[in-house]
Length: 290
Image 1 (tube, rainbow, N blue to C red):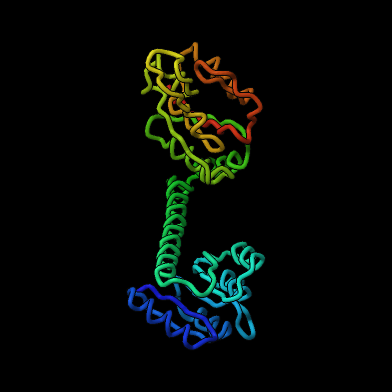
Image 2 (image 1 turned 45 degrees about the vertical axis):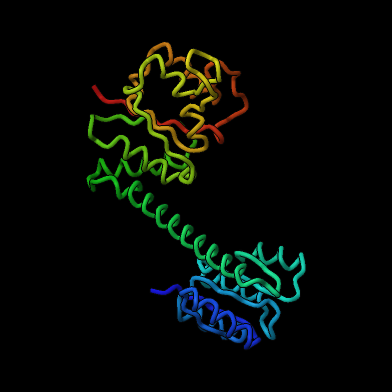
């Protein structure tokens, strides 16, 4: 299916010029001589991009942009004008225009802008789709069960998701501890930040401190560059410490300090201070019932 573009301009010559140009590039076009006609088309058809003049009788291009973003926010809008001002350009960008260009413009310039605007729209739609898919997969739909005990689990997840507390998830192997951790993360205010899982039992004991907290260049043999640890990688999100009971005893005291004081120190580096619960990740640990 061809990508549909709506061209809005009160000048017939400009509408026809852009229509010919865009159709040669493989796009399907519809034309409107004013903003009111454009809005009628937008209510009945799906357009990937609107190219509109700014200065038109009646509703101008800026107000049309404002209406488009309320009606179909996913539609990209490119504004063109022969009377460009810095203030108008700033307002257009604030209202969500992809770009704002002055006449006369070069043919290649408009081709590139159209292509880039459509690519950005595609990426935005894909990003929205992936976020929805993640939420559906790791929301409560990933957990199975309607019994009284499972409903109690869902209620508890809802309560802790909105809090800034650390969470310990207990359960036998295969009971869905990581699913519960993901449900907590993706139903929390941190859902747009990273969810970083780590299997504590799979990290060699001599590397665990560096893996969790990171290290500075030259802090030990083989440390050829600074490296962020898992706590830093999960900043603002959730760090899931799977099988947290496998953490060596001498490292548990350092881990406890992170959980209590919300600060840590890279191997060979200074202590990171002032990073309270809002900036450090919220650790979620699992412990297998024995």
